[in-house]
Length: 439
Ligand code: NAD
Image (cartoon, rainbow, N blue to C red; front, side):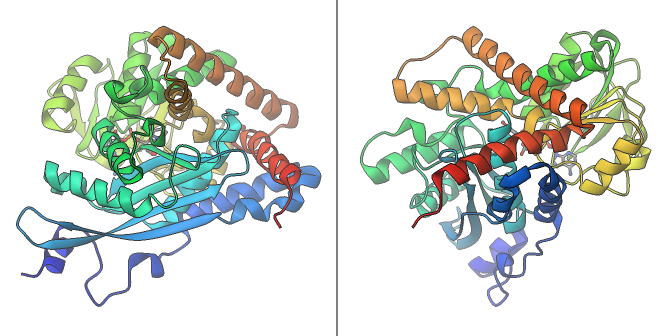
């Protein structure tokens, strides 16, 4: 069996003679959802709307071949991406995703959502995102290190502490960030901790970063609940995705007294109306790699997850999960988007008609990038803050961002998403206008 065939069996890579996936990437999907979201906000941008094309085109797209030697001595090729959507307000910032289904269109959308998010919470960054089309669960530890180092070398021509700062995302973690930081540093000849965020604490990482996104989801979820007079202490919570974001958010809601009644991840769905023991589930997932087989709840068919009645639903897995097919079945009061792009524009409309309050990703999951910003600031100053200071500052940023977005939504009778886009797009386009075009 050839090396190409080995890679083909492990991942949905095209064969030697097929076109690379980015050449036939359909630009529908997440990128199209993002464009529709921009079209919806355009009427509210006043004279700044003349710059709107800026938001519809990524500034820079890099597609790289990532060849690595596999443990069995063969060579496999993987496709990697880094997209810088916009840098009008500062360096590009956004995570790196390892997933077998990653496409260029998806990374473009994720990079654009980072531009909007960073502007919505007013951290001084543009938007960027990266990814490798690989199932990391099928790689050994040393193969994972090799793919990370080669990918980092390939994209090092456009990343850097002042230009574009990657971070963790789906299936990437502190170890991956440590390898990325080391590779970049080796290439430039000195240690540059500020090139990535989400690093281990011992390498310039920030206290509180690991939990920051889930904590932000919780903070914003509580703010939203308060606005509609929903008592968190008796709320029923359902979570899709029990990883870094969903797992932490579920634990914080449960610790505040809420009942975690349903969880879904890539291994299955579980349900217990009287509440799932979140700490026992976290322990189970740490050992088993997923929620399947957890004894403290009933297994459900995956599709039935969308019929479960709850007060707060947290999609914290992948994009496009709440769509035309399932949106009308959702019986909840608030959707707090932990994932990026989990709700399609059509589903957004259905939920709004059904009086479901949607707190959009660009605000709800901004806690991660906010503490990434704190990490970057700490790295530059080589002065590190306490976890209490970080959580306190994070909560303040999240509460203030939520309050501004809520006010714009109420005053103009807009969805919270369109209100957030309104604030964010104005900030980006104002920067664009003030900087002017070069040359
Ligand atoms: P993760 O890898 O830690 O967890 C992902 C979770 O989603 C896992 O529980 C996995 O089992 C589940 N999942 C995967 N495919 C699924 C499927 N088809 N159906 C149901 N569940 C599935 O990733 P994460 O860091 O928690 O990221 C989750 C989402 O949050 C992504 O959209 C990511 O872009 C977004 N996000 C993450 C951060 C961060 O700081 N990690 C910040 C902002 C946004």
